[in-house]
Each structure stands twice: as C-alpha cells, then as structure tokens.
Image (cartoon, rainbow, N blue to C red; front, side):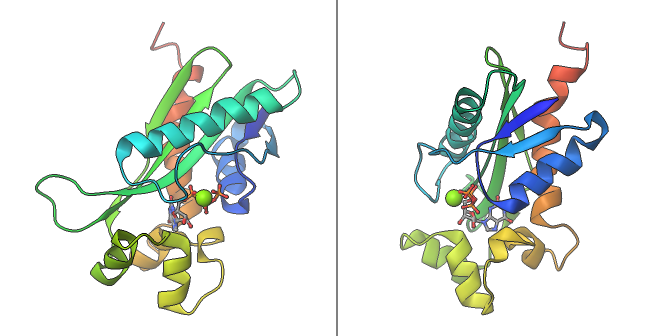
Length: 173
Ligand SMILES: O=c1[nH]c(=O)c2ncn([C@@H]3O[C@H](COP(=O)(O)OP(=O)(O)OP(=O)(O)O)[C@@H](O)[C@H]3O)c2[nH]1
Ligand SMILES: [Mg+2]
C-alpha cells in the first residue's frame, strides 16, 4: 500500500508509518502547501489544511499511490472553555472520497496562548519558551504539556486512525 503524506516533517511521517504498520505501507513525504496559514486558528482552518495536504500529496505522487494523507495542527478557542486549545486533524483521500479524523486536544499554557494571539506560530514559541530546538519534530507541544503521557507522533497517529479507519472497515457500506 503506497501512501503519500503532505509534509516533510519526520514526526508526521513516523506517525503514519507507525499507525498503518499492519498494512506494511510505503510512505512518501510530499512537500505541499497546506493552503492555510502556518498557524491555523480554528477547527475549520485546521481541517481545511489537512484536506488540502491530503489531496495535493496524492495528486503530486505517482499514479500507483493509493492514499493521500494530510495532518495539520491548529489552535482554537472553544465557547465556554478557558484559554487557547491545541487541536490536530487528519484527512485521508483515495482520490474520490475524503475522510477526516480528530486527534487529542489540550489547553495551552497562558504565556504560550498570549504569544499565539499576537500572531506567532506554536512550534517556534514552544522552542523559545523551553529553550529547545525543533520540539515540533519530536515530542511536540502535546508531549511537553502532558509531561510525556503522550507525544506528537502518538497524537497525530490517533487522528490518522480515525480518518483512515473508514476506508478499511465495512461499517460505512
Ligand atoms: O499538531 C501539533 N501537535 C503538537 O504537539 C505540536 N507542537 C507544536 N505544534 C505546532 O503547530 C503548528 C502547526 O502544525 P503543522 O501541522 O503545520 O506542523 P509543522 O509546521 O510542524 O509541520 P509541516 O507544516 O512542515 O507539515 C506548528 O507550528 C507546529 O510546530 C504542534 N502541532
Ligand atoms: Mg506547518
């Protein structure tokens, strides 16, 4: 099974390889535009980014690729909930149908949220606050903010499972 992923971020490629392991996929990174801002600021924008990445990755891959996958991280405010929430969404397409799946979400620290509201992007803000380099390519904000109870690979993998599963099960026929 050949899968084209709309990102070159190794953590996203790893999430796809690990989650789909039982299908023994060949996973290829395709450098595509998400078509949304670097830091999406709503569920709609985040889902749109995931869908664009999935469609564009499949369109740019060679013809024998079966699936395009898009993974997108975003932030949003939810009515009635305090602060700014990190969200992540996956989209999978077979070229006709598109399925979407949501991943874990959690409230970001207020000092991080304030900088996002000023227009900054989460990855660089986390690196700056933590004095790390490339946290978005390893544990991610979700790994740091859960004290390692989960990490970005696992979290994105959960979103992917929810978007990919409907292509495998007969429950939707
Ligand atoms: O979903 C996430 N889970 C996390 O735990 C996490 N930690 C940081 N970020 C940041 O969220 C922004 C949009 O993410 P994103 O989908 O554009 O990813 P990315 O920029 O890392 O890769 P890519 O755009 O090259 O594919 C980027 O600033 C990421 O650094 C996370 N996103
Ligand atoms: Mg990005």
